[in-house]
Image (cartoon, chains in turn purple, brown):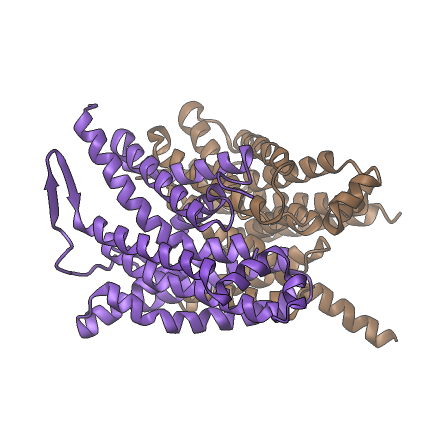
Amino acid sequence: MFSFELLLNAVAAGLLLGGFYAAVSLGISVTFGLLEVANIAHPVFIIAGAYGAYALNTAFALDPILAGLLLTPIFYGLGVVIYRIYYVSFEQRGEESLRGLVFFFGLMFIVEVSLLLVYGVDYRMIETPYIGRSVLIGPLGISLRLFVPCVVGVVLTLVVYLFLAKTFYGRAIMGVSQDSLALRLMGADPVHIKTIAFGLAVATTSLAGALLLVIAPVEPSIGREYIGRVFAITVLGGMGSIGGTLVAALILGVAESLTATFSGPSWSLAVSFGLLLLALAVRPSGLFGR
Amino acid sequence: MQRCVPVVLALSIIGLGLLLTATVENRYFYFATYVILQYVVLATAWNILGGYTGYVNFGTPAFFALGAYMATFLMRAYHAPLPVQLLAGGLISGLLGLGIGYLTLRLKGVFFSIATLALTVVLQTVMINWEFVGGAKGLSIMRPATVLFFSSYVKFLFAVMLCLAVASVTIAWWLEHSWIGRGLAAIRDNEEAAECMAVPTLKLKILATTVSGALMGMAGAPFPLHVTLIEPTSAFNLDYAVNSLAMPMIGGTTTWLGPVVGAILLGTAQQTATVTISSALNLLIVGVVLVAFVILAPEGLVGLVRRLVQRERA
């Protein structure tokens, strides 16, 4: 069963998958890691993004990644509205932990069932030039449907990293996660900054959803599989560290790919959740935690 | 005297239910009522942990399905009768609850909730790969042809679930009115302060997770016989997580009455909607109602009524 070639290919596929996972988890790293808002509806927005890209692709034959990019302003607006509701209903009353969590859980359910009502339970997929092709480098086969999302995912991670590190609003977002009172004393409104951050986080999901559509066919309920993945990556990466998110995503990608190759794909889902349980039990502050 | 009232009430509800099985024949009635009663058990069990201590459990499907799979295993391996399945299902899910209880030492708030969700997926993966109890394909279950005292098996299952529902509500009522309930409420309000006031927080939390898990497991044990099929997707259905959380939220989480009211209202609405509209649409309604309640009426229906009554008096 075991061969070096198989191992090499599994690791390569895992690394590519990891780049995609980074794009998927970025939003959670911002909302959960920095703002401490447990947006468990995040994965379902990714699925909504995938369906948005699917709709644009079937209607106008747009490239899915371009479609995902075009959808980001709409998703940003969606994020702003959701955060406003969340803020007024829960954060302002100081009831965010329990009821806020239930709010997002309900939201997740609403989006998922709405997609189910519109598109049904069938798997949806698309055709693009880079799906189904692969490049051979010696014994290594790299499939483009994994390679393209990985590149886009890494670029997106880099953009978010630079935004947070270099721009005024990015630094303000980092500031609000450290000390929102100090930010207020500096003359910036924490709620305004948090709204922007939340909008940004939801905006990344439309692009991540488009990448998901490239990698595999989508179906409304697969968002649940990503809940474990995104939270595992965020916790393992150290809550809000963007670089940590990328490293953790690559680790998870390789771990899942190895499991799928050597003990069957039906076990690969347990890897992310197992890793999450392990990280929570052993080192809750993550690999790169403060 | 006051202590006798709930016992008399509980026994008379069971008595009425048994009387019903002797008069009404409609099989669908029992099938639907069974589901509603099952939700009374699940919502009450969820509330013992979620409502009283404030630890939000998304893992209802894990406990429920573990009970169902334990029952399936016992049926296949030893042809065990239903009472044994119930006890074993409660025992194994109670043990899982015990483990989860120790987890609360390290995991608070959101992390605890995500861990319970993770647990569900891990357990589901294990069951998908366990061929003896059907694996991914599932397994059909044969009901015993005859059963003592009842004219059909559906009626018998209905009676079993009715007893379970009454028992779990009684347990919740008793917990709430004993010193344990006050300790749990102290944990919900401020765990550190409670610990400082010498409330045995860990012991109480473990008690809550164990009782909650055991009740969910017992609710799951008759599931294979009820639908005559066991299969991972339906046993680990996320609907159980949403419903067992939405029902107490809608009814009110601070009293034993809340989950019962929520489960009966929402359960009945769902059972009617599944027949008259469609099952996907009725889930959408659950989601919308849940979000609406959590934003607009955080104390649930019981809280709303209580506030109205107080205003009348004033």
